[in-house]
Length: 341
Image 1 (spheres, rainbow, N blue to C red):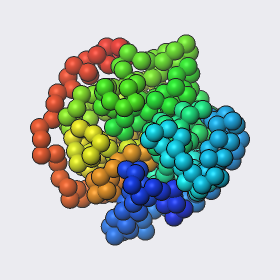
Image 2 (image 1 turned 90 degrees about the vertical axis):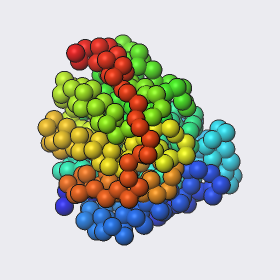
Image 3 (image 1 turned 30 degrees about the horizontal axis):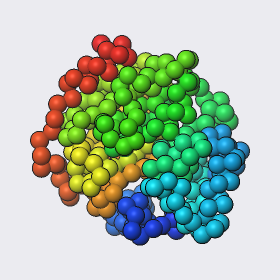
Image 4 (image 1 turned 60 degrees about the horizontal axis):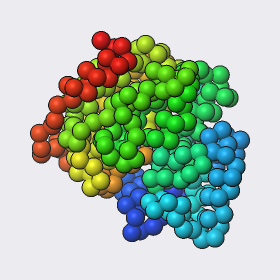
């Protein structure tokens, strides 16, 4: 078995039942995966709290202390969208640690690829501020670990969440050590991620934003991955590929207006797996971000794992009932800007 997963029941203890980012997301997802027999075919990687020295590579001590203090008081809100309860600090450490442990397993050759089924999500968590349901930036912490502790110098982070991963972009905006690639509904929360945002200084050209109008479907996303992401990876030759896997671009999701299906997510997974096999000996690690329709999230995660395993895809929700919109213009803009023509 070459595909791993990270999961710990403690991830359910960060919870507010009235909030869209609640424990039921992950509970339903793991139930679907277990019923489908997928978890039994995967290597389980244990989640442990992220070592503080690795967390502090992204988040300063004063912010880490704030998260702990609010949780120790029983919880509250760090911004209008982002809550904590009494267990949230420990669970957030476990989420960042789970993704880091998966990356360690991939880099050690114990597995080829895997999926960290963690929460809270991370790609909006700015170094010194919680944002968008996120407390710590799990994918950024894992990337920093690989760069600082494992001798890597070229990491590709692909983010297909509905929302732009503003924190991940900001953390790596000034460096060529990471290519950050994002597809996202635009303009939409958090308002960042225009195609002209390409990095700064030594990082210029290493941020690749693909802002999309509402209504892009499987075909459009597939073209973007084939015509933009793959050539970017071919030119960059990453040593590791990390994925911020958000499923709120599914056509059934209540927060977005995109039209991806579970089968569409499986196609994106296959492209990412093929890229990893061609450029970095298969080293590929996903971490869970958004996705708020419970069935769409669960079956899209299942389709992602089926894509990693090489299985036929089971998509009980089917394709979007609405026609997709064209991505021709944005592909032309982004390819021209990044000299992919």
